[in-house]
Length: 193
Image (tube, rainbow, N blue to C red; front, side, top):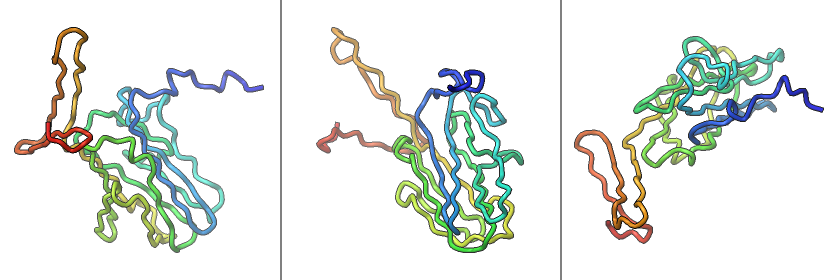
């Protein structure tokens, strides 16, 4: 039977929103994964209820994948969700130089108003992860600093206020974005509202 002293409570394991990104690295017959989630209760530092510090393998051939904030590597990194722009370093350590594949999943958990891109700081290439969530790279066994940065940019926020029963058309949608931005609202059939 499970030891209840080692189980987290449901309050600690739940999040207040669904923005959760998984990154997986595969190559040389090894794989590793890291997770990045946005949570209103988290901070940019270590949160014992929300984060997990990266534990590196004793096998020098293994892949180690982590996000990194203030010189701390995380396998699970929870950060506050009230951002407009955010850059998270992604560290890939490999035991053998070669071809590796980074796969990003959970991108659909983010609003259409959030842009997510991967910047390769060595090549200068930036990839829109909503358009291409698989990225094949050459990694060197000598690289120790984060080679990648995941960029999150909220171009707008939308707030829906539902109609109250019996009050007619009292509901509304509030869009907030950068100055000079324009938006067109349409229904599912494409008709402009």
